[in-house]
Image: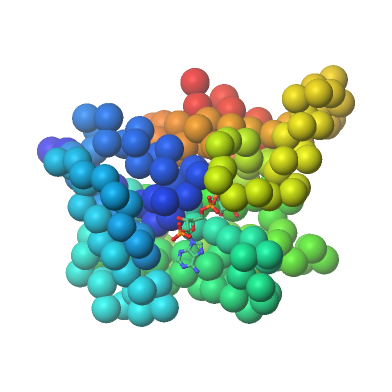
Length: 219
Ligand SMILES: NC(=O)c1ccc[n+]([C@@H]2O[C@H](COP(=O)([O-])OP(=O)(O)OC[C@H]3O[C@@H](n4cnc5c(N)ncnc54)[C@H](OP(=O)(O)O)[C@@H]3O)[C@@H](O)[C@H]2O)c1
């Protein structure tokens, strides 16, 4: 029997790559995309559900899937406040995980970030760490946490850190060798491919994948 995947954040840089990949792969026979605006695409395997993430409970019955891929995220520039950012990076993923688990999901895959740590003095690393910690308390058969470094990919929106970091990485690749290798930027497509392979192959209860391990899994 084919499997059903659920993607939250399917309109984002990684989520969109993942969506296209899963639609191509016969391993999944249905892909549910949770979005807040139409994706403007159609596919026989795709079920698009437009939701208000503040009221995810209402859609609980629609969240039944085997594997749940959480690619949600925002930036402080877009969210404007730390509270609003926490909603997208922590609250929504945790609510989704809780509801999908109740609907029978077995595997939750979460994009965190390099440096995630609930005790970090950096807000972004701290909230990613808190989300990881809370997810770890949920009785999923498998929880996979991916901690990519800086993401590369075609983004409409200008993000200074990505643009600057990507330029440095491409111009001075020798800086990212030895102990600095773990900081080298990673293509969004690579993260998406790794998520798919991990979902298919991993039978571990809880796993955390560093950016370098994500690269290895993508091949
Ligand atoms: N960018 C980096 O360099 C980097 C590095 C390490 C880890 N990460 C993490 O990697 C993950 C994926 O990053 P990405 O660059 O692919 O993300 P992205 O392109 O910014 O996409 C984020 C997704 O989250 C959704 N989203 C944002 N705000 C929302 C809100 N208020 N309510 C509902 N949905 C909302 C977006 O939906 P809409 O299209 O509707 O806005 C989109 O589908 C994120 O968790 C990010 O923190 C990123």
